[in-house]
Image (cartoon, rainbow, N blue to C red):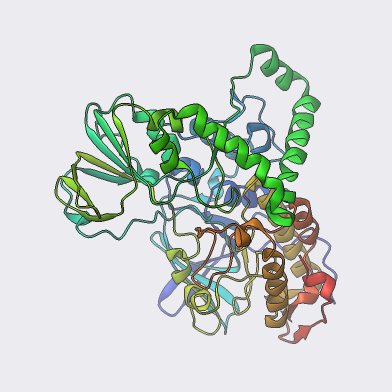
Length: 523
């Protein structure tokens, strides 16, 4: 194979395919949250300047740009929730509020000068593999492009999921999803309903309960909520983190390994989590005195089966005089009221929908068309979400995801997983240069063995044995969302791009496939 001494830098030249003029690039990145922004910075660091980031929002930030609801904050400790190459000594608290995380991402984008590589307020309407030209054709609301490599960095929590409730479209008051908070809506003194009791809802409720006239919280399934060990950093601590760099890195390292210990309970021996469940039960008892309300908020499944939430204010909020917890299912929304299965009609002025996101069925996947003319949504609908190492999908050449299927976490920072995938992306592009590759496509047998191994590991986890149904599971009953092991194990398998697992073509058009050992496809 031909040895390349430097990365190929393809110019952003224009090309006409059919009647549509297209600007061609080496790499197109879709999305600019932690994943997409990190990918842009990594490519720049690698000496690659022929790339473009397409972002539908007005700036970087992803979920932290979009989720501006009252009380929005991270549930991962601040020192662990940043890029490893750009620690932030300016965090004000041990758990960062949304505004500080968004400011951090803005500052990182500015420092690494990748803003001019972004195309903001632009939606990708179609990304289709062109078999003849062996490249991706990407149509957007701001023009059409083509690229040798397409990087999907849209994230799992980007498409709000709205409940399918009779009459909800006829509601005459304020109605919005938590991820699309309407800051023009005045909720002071109003009758407000929150539908959902997930991670967003438990932050929103306590933040607005004191100002609204009355708050109804509609709960389908009670979550386990642990105490939130949050505090402000003192001036001395802040100064130390700014002027003694190794101190913050040491704190980050300690938090990381402390969080990794949770994997033992999640993925290997769920009985360990009984200690955490007793702590969560004490959190209920501390916040709620009424036995009937305590019973309503106590889950009937083992902790860890669904996402563990953290809050010191959720249970006390539910016990307030102007708050009602409603556990009967909603059957109808009227112009000014919500009707539950027991026939109760509760009048409301505003409804906040906190029902999560399309994680396993994102509309984004309908717009990605592979070499056989099938959309990614169609393929995954038939077989379930599957990818090789969470990055590559058979039938979709030269496409790599940053944190795709089975890369989510229930215990630690997704930024760690993102950086692991950035290693894989960087190594893949280097492999293309080194071996003069035109295309790479993960082999079906490799992808199948890898995912069989993932689901085999998943069988012993709390997510399979904990007795609950969660958004972690797809319609086939498989957990295609979470990584079932330690994060350092994922870092190990994504450190290098294993070209042996792929069918590849060189510029001359020859097809090449190398055997892959079982070790290489194991998680």
